[in-house]
Each structure stands twice: as C-alpha cells, then as structure tokens.
Amino acid sequence: MIENGDFVRVDLTGRIKETGEIFETTHEDVANEAGVYDENKAYVPMPVVIGGGHFLDAIDQALVGMKDGESKHVEIQPKDGFGERSSQAIKMIPLKEFKKANINPVPGMPITIGYNEGKILTVDGGRIKVDFNHTFAGKTLEYDLHIVEVIDDDKEKVKSMIELHYPQQPKFDLEKTEVNIDGKTVIIKLDKVANYNNNQTQFAITQAKMRISKDIWVNMDIEKVEFVESFEKPPEEVVSEDDNETSTSEIPSSEEVE
Image 1 (cartoon, helix red, strand yellow):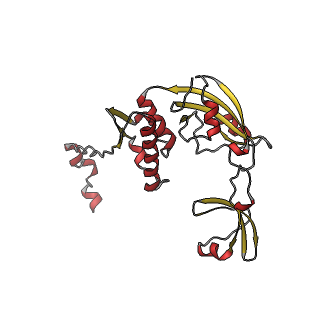
Image 2 (spheres, helix red, strand yellow; image 1 turned 135 degrees about the vertical axis):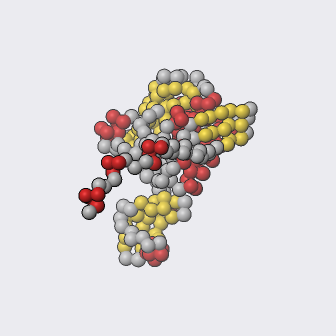
Image 3 (cartoon, helix red, strand yellow; image 1 turned 90 degrees about the horizontal axis):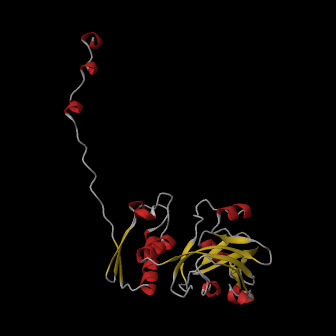
C-alpha cells in the first residue's frame, strides 16, 4: 500500500464541482475535450512523492493506503483545498503604483505584487480593486486519481524528480540523463540539450535543481546531490589532399580569360 515518502506516478483529472470545469489533467484526450489543451505541456502520469508537498494535503491523504493500479474519486471541501474566499484579500491600490511599474491596469488582468498573485476587478479613477483570493478559493474540488506506477528503483526515483521539476524542452531526453549513486551521493549528468533552454533564466534552472535536490535529500538516504556539466571539444575536420587541389575543370581557359 502507498505510504508517505513513496515515489509514484499518478494520472489525475481535477475539476470544480460547482461548474464541472476541468482545470488540471494528465490525459491529452480529456484536455482536448475540455478545451484546456496546452501544446507546451506533456500529458503523462505525474511523478510525485507522497507527502512531499507536490499535491494538496487532502490529495496526499487520499493516495495513502491505495495500491498500485488502483483508482479513486475524491471530493475536497474549500477548507481542505484553497480556503474560503475572504473580503480581506480584496485590496484597493492607487493607480500611481501601477504607473511606477509601467502597467496599464484593466479589469480581469492577472497581476503579481510582491509574492502575492491577484486579479484586477475594477479600475475606478485613481483606485484599482485587486482580488488576491486564490482562483479556486471557496470552490469544492473533485479529483479522479489513478496510481499508474510505484517507483522502487533509486535511479528512477531521481529521474522522476528531474522530470517533475526541471524545465522541459521538446528535445529534452530524460533517457540521456545519467544518474549514478555513490554511497550517499547522487551524481546527475543531464542530457546536454537541457543546458540550452532559452526560455528559462539561470535563476529558474538553479531553483529547479534545488527542488530536485531537496526531494532527494528528504525522501532518500542521500546527503549530497551533484549536477555535472561537461563540454567536449568537437572533432577536427579532416581535410583530404583532394580538397586542397583545384580541379582543372575549375581553371578558366585562356579563351575565357580573354
């Protein structure tokens, strides 16, 4: 049975009970049918650590005790999901604060202030009303869960956390990522394509590596995680003697010169 600390792959679909709106799924056909398909997302079972903070606590609790291959439908009340809506989370912010940041506020615009994400409700003269409640605050959530695989192999556990956290690219091949475990040290050599992600800042990549490392430290008997990068000199071009000779057919005749 599944326990806290287990590495698993989970298929899931999450919807808002009140409206039936699907907001999360690992199934491509479900995403297409619901009109939420994202071409930048890989629709595959999600690798997670049970109790590792990758899911809501209520989902983790529902997964504990399940068996490999088992499915379950769970309903999550607002208090166990994203909380109840609060009037205190709706703030009035002076327009000048938006002008300082070169932002032209319009109703419905998502915005981040500090570490708080919100949505602009109204623009009234010099005052902007922003709702900092979570999008799903006050909503009852429903999840269909299915345990696809329990991961037992230590190297595959490490790869599953790379898959979960590392910024993926279309050409990124997890099978080309090398993982070696030497005592209490994990050594990771990523597929070389992973080092050339133009869509991610170096800071974002470093954060991803820290999240991977933390999940490994906490849930495995490992004390150190090393990410190794290597750059190989490309092979020198071999120039044949024929390449250094000019073909007689390329030499203009005396008639052509004249």
